[in-house]
Image (cartoon, rainbow, N blue to C red; front, side):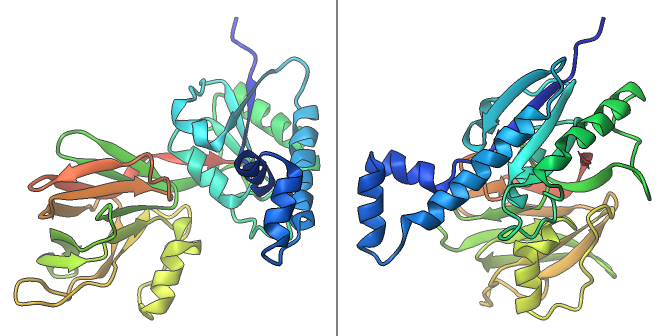
Length: 311
C-alpha cells in the first residue's frame, strides 16, 4: 500500500521575526525602528499577512494527508519524500530556493503578499490551495508529474541550470548560478564559450559570471541584460536554453573582453578553468550552500538533467 501524500509547507522568516530575535522584545524592536524614522506597524502587517496565509494553506490540506513544514534556512537539511507536494508560501524567490532540493515532486507557489510580489512563481492565492492539492493528487494517481505539462496542462516544466566541477561537485538552480571570488575581488579564469564560429577561448579577469535560465531572466539576469543593452533574446522559462554574462570584464595585456555574453542551447555547455586561488559557485543567491574551486580546477555549466514541476 502506497503512502498518503505529504504536504510540505515551505516559508521564510519574516522581518518581524528577525527583529524580535535580534532585539529580544517587540518594545525594543519598535524603539530601534522609531529612532530611525521607521514604523514597526509596517513589518507587523506583513508578518500578520504571511502568518494568515500559512494558516489558510495548512487548513486546506486534506485530513488524510501527512504534513510537514520547513523554514528556508533549513532546506539543505530537510529530506523531501517522493510523495511530497511542496507548497511555497511567500515570495517568488522561495520557489527558486526549493528547486535545487527536489526531484520531480510538484511545487505550488502561494503568494502571501500580492501587493509586493511580482507573482512569477508564486502565482496562486491561499484560497486556491485545496484545488491545487486536488490537481497534485490527480497527477500522482495518473503516474507522476513528469509528463503532465505542455500547453494547457496543469504543470510548467521549468528549465534549471547546473554547474559541475571536475571533482564531482554539483550546483543546480532555477534562476541562475554565479561563479566568482568569495570576497568580491577579481575572478581570474580561462573561459571556453561556444559561439557561431566554433568555440572561443579567452582569459578573463572580471567580477564573475552569471548563467541564467529563462525563469532567472525575469530577475538578476534581466538587470544585467538591460544595463548592457544586450541584443540577445532572453529565453522563456520552459525553453531548453540558458543565457550567460560576464560581469565587468577587465581588459589587460593578458585578459580580454571579447567574449562576455552568449546563449547555451540544448546540450551545449560553457567551460571555465580556474586561475584564481579560490572561486565559489552558488545558485539562486544561497551563498551559504556553495561549491569552492581552487586554481587549475575545471567547471562546466549547462542545462540540468531535471526540471522544476510548477503547478
